[in-house]
Image (cartoon, rainbow, N blue to C red; front, side, top):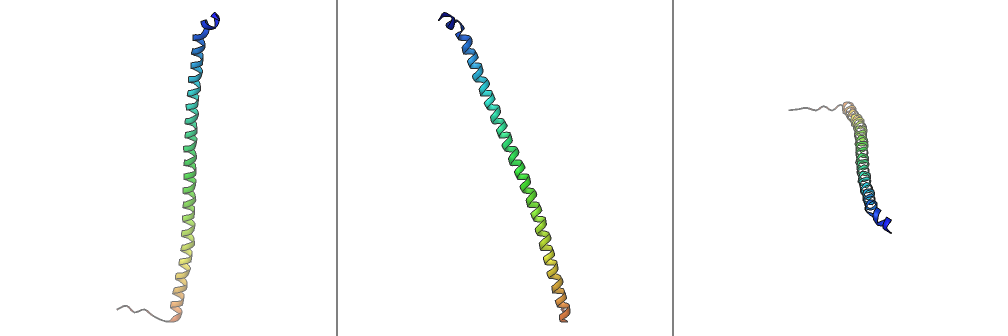
Amino acid sequence: MADALQYAPENRRMCCEVRVNLWRKGNQDLKQKRTRKVEHVQNVGSSLVDRLLKLRAYLAHVFGSVLGKLQRLTQQAWDESGWSLRLR
């Protein structure tokens, strides 16, 4: 019993050190998780922006070609009709 009382302060100090180390490790783990989440959000955001830019370019190409064809057909029909536009 006397031996247990003699080593008790040292055991208490070791327990406190273990708790502090576990607490620090827990904080480090939380920081790493937050960092990973931020990196994931940044990656998702940048890939989403890339996809939106590609979609925008594709839609501009499609609508541009459709409008170009429509303009050419309209011009061709106007020319074939023989009508002329007189500005006063």
